[in-house]
Image 1 (cartoon, helix red, strand yellow):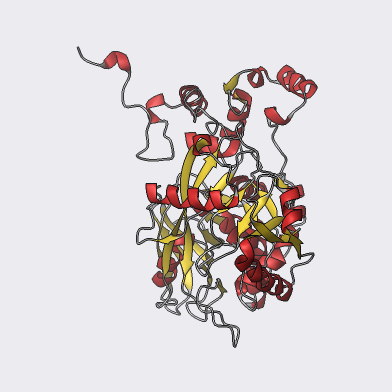
Image 2 (cartoon, helix red, strand yellow):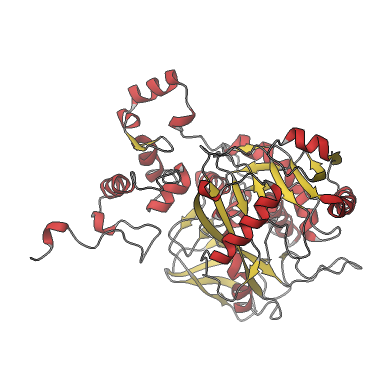
Length: 495
């Protein structure tokens, strides 16, 4: 049995990492663990990267409250944690007179939720703001508080700051069960890395949060159906989109949007298809066609020849009813401390706008623990600042020269498309949350995401990962166990 923890957090997506950072402010011994080889490998690394204004969730739901409460937190968070964030605003674009009528409902809904600054603009004004827009645009809803982020770097930066403040992080560690005492209180967590005693366990397991809560005997009626969303990524050298452009939403999803990204590559998607398999992140020809049709409706000049990648993410689509009287909605967030077993903080069904809402969810967890009688005493030396690491392509020529003078590894370009250097890769391997796989390096530095899709950099990254970790290149993986690049040295091939 390992040493006891005050709090164990199950799942290191953006919600689990935000909870870890919020609780690291207090005198608690905290463990955050994740079943994958790196943090944030689920929905936190495969989404639309939008900080939502808050007009989409139904008024009265927990989703709406958490979205609107969290949105203004993002400016301060990005300043403290040094992750990229831009408050660009977003548009819901109506094509034709019928869709225009639906914008009034969204405007009213946003105002009821408390979203500031929203207003309608004409089709003529929308054509002025986005020259590539469909000429049939009839108007748009403008929400100035919408924003763009790099969701994976949000997750990494948040987790790194938690580690700086004493949180322990374990990856490649899967949840198995809870340990309960004779009084129906959680006293520990069983994992594939052994048993860990604790006083509180936080279920932040995302797609698997239903499985985790059922192990505790909580909400047996609750289930998560994975909702797969496919995306396509366009070459930033071929087309520029400056805005976040939503279609008028349907009952099922926000629809196929066309959006700018902080990395410059326009993004189109997602689809919204419920599937049975929580590990099925396949992309499909049907999904590509659906995205193509939806994107062309918004931007008729888009050309699939500019497509450089497709990916898909899975959303934790739950079936929890809204607990506000009179509000009929069956896909709300769960944020609670159940009456039994004691010692569980239960977070479930955290789908979109879960990324946006994550800092408010973390603050709600702190409030729930205080209400439950947990004596949260602040650490006198808690530091909210996560120091940035240099990004070579963002520096001026003078700054690049100074950086190379301090460390010559920044002069060796490993990824030509995105101008990522050896110095940046080494820094990520030795960061507070070490990048140990190719995909971990890719998500942190953006290498391998350009036109060549890693064709130039991959052998060099494998070499650096092996050297820095003191392992054989045969042990280097793409994303963890079972995803090795190499099987043998070529000179060992028999004739």
